[in-house]
Amino acid sequence: MNSSLLKLILFSCIIFQTSCDITFKRKVEKEKKAPVLIDEQLKSSKKVDENKNKKTEKYTNTFTNNDSELISSYYSDKTNSIIRKDMIMHTKVSKEQTKKLVVDEYVPRDIQVMPLPLKLNRKLSFLPLDKLRVQIGTRVILMNVKTRRILDVIKI
Image 1 (cartoon, rainbow, N blue to C red):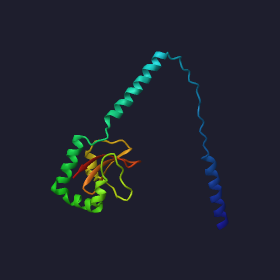
Image 2 (cartoon, helix red, strand yellow; image 1 turned 135 degrees about the vertical axis):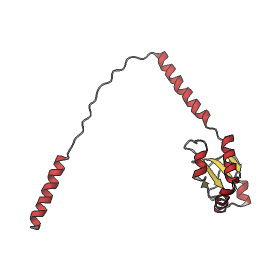
Image 3 (cartoon, one colour; image 1 turned 60 degrees about the vertical axis):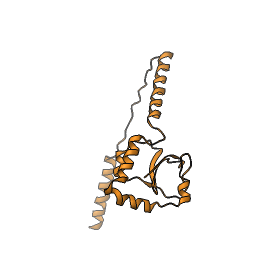
Image 4 (cartoon, one colour; image 1 turned 45 degrees about the horizontal axis):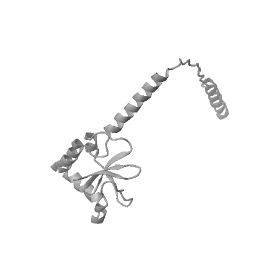
């Protein structure tokens, strides 16, 4: 009985495997492109350049006025004082290390950084992926993720 059950299972597996053998064929159609005039190409490239410039102007390397006000008000609020104290204690830095946290310098590898609370981060403006807001001690820093270069500092 065991061998017949085994044969049945193997047979059903083989049937299932062959029935599920689906091949997908992609139809390749040749696209016919009409000749494009040089003026049209120049116009389209100028539009792309203008869009790039708009995107880069949108994001600056400093905190916006609205962001700095939101950060200050969040940490000055009495309900968030416990969070603030915990974060400051968790990322405590010495006076020597604090002096190194200036604009256009780099965050040393021995200093621990902590992202801002999610509740606060959701209220702030959007940042590109290469920038990050972090808290180090009593400072909120806008930094480049890859290079750890400090772009702006707010004291809380």
